[in-house]
Length: 124
Image: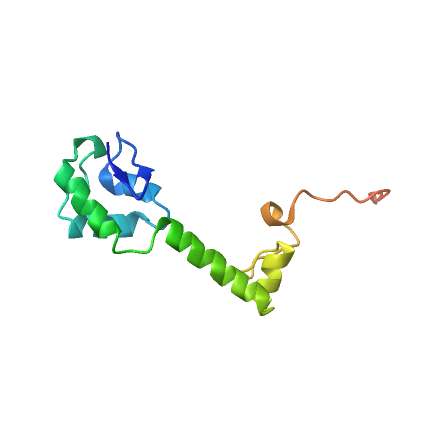
């Protein structure tokens, strides 16, 4: 049972994929961690020894992940909202922040589409 940063890693996956369950660890960082811990990245999580898990834990501790990273991200968003920057105002309104179009798409941030009453289609 491999538990790193209070996250239970999936047993039947390779260690480089299993590490991506941790918030802030992607594929490239997972490969770097495996390389630094001297663990074969193609090894399954269930086949890891206690020493390998301990070395992986110590390598993950060197990076900002999970709760610390979440806190850091939310604090930076709150800071932008407080100083009323452009990005902060977009966060407040629930609109896309990074220049995406909003006339179509962006439904996940804007919400369900509004129906306009009594609008007739013009036929030709």
